[in-house]
Image 1 (cartoon, one colour):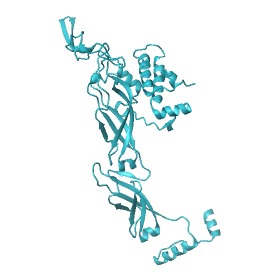
Image 2 (cartoon, helix red, strand yellow):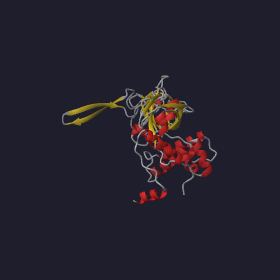
Image 3 (cartoon, helix red, strand yellow):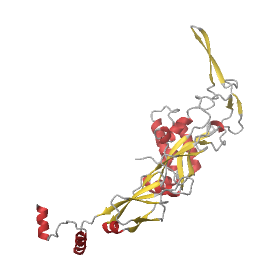
Image 4 (cartoon, helix red, strand yellow):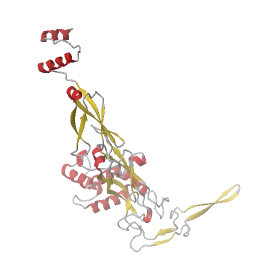
Length: 372
């Protein structure tokens, strides 16, 4: 049976969001495979990440509390980071980055935050009007306890005792050519020349912690598939308050059941009868803008496959008021069944055009035609 998510994280069912986060961070540091060598550490860490994924989101948590499970219909919108990293990049990978090093004892790591990428799916209707969308993603965010500095209560930055504040260390090796000196970045302070004497206990002196972010982005009208939007400072937080990375949002637009996009122009099909094709007609179709009706002027003598252009009824151009055009591709529908009166009228029309047509067949003749 699946474990209870509250039990996995170690909180009560009425725990606040802050209590859930704090308990998760504490257990994650204990169970992460980089620091815990127990055989089941990796599996327990995956269970912990799954529990946090549910309980840290209000809609998922509500569904879990009601039904004991979370399905696809929870309403939770998670956008993964596969566009930038090539595969799913979840809370486990963020903790791997978190444990990759600090300024006081582990392997050195970059100070500035990395850019992060998310994909955002839109419908063609949303492209036509522009929309605000909430993006949910995991990142290393500034630690709230120390305001991103990494310094604990009563602490301060002091010169690194390993490199004596230089940020560089010199090593000497003996070779057959003699002694060789090499200089490298100090692994204790990541080249900064400083250390924290009392690190923040929440983030272990890094100034950042894994967290789930909710960001609302304004998508402009007319945006194209594959275009990117940049949110400055919403990527990975920097070490000890260094410059954060950016969030790169790549737009993906779903196919539409009625319209095909070509730049700012739209293409659609419109079906008309043979009489409308011959005599001309005005046909109304639903536009891409909500509650918009587009009138298609069918000229007399319209042919099957003919393309009719309606100006300014396509998609809007980005950052401009103009719109593209709508192209209606005509499909002339030939009736498969006719009433006696309809056939009589068409036969009269055939005589007027001097067209040779099949003679009207009685039911027995039609059966014989079918059998032959």
